[in-house]
Length: 123
Image (tube, rainbow, N blue to C red; front, top):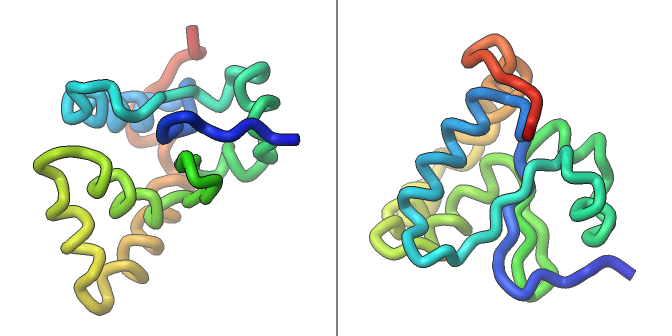
């Protein structure tokens, strides 16, 4: 049985420089430590949640305490709801047409993320 998050948990690519930079920004925004940040290379933690590794390798995944899992661009407005002062992300995604564009942009970046910012092994 997969673990339930006691707080929102974000899985990301810990070997991707672009992803690490994005998580660093998120960490600065999350001054109260509301969101747990886990690289998907942490096999023991991933196993606790029962998330498929190929999906985690393709996009960030946000596991919410109620059991919902949102991935990729769809996680952004959820992150906005969780962070004080970042609700504008939620409102932005409510604008008609923004979500499909964000999904395409996210997919484009995700496919090229290792070329955009050099990464290094998670450690």
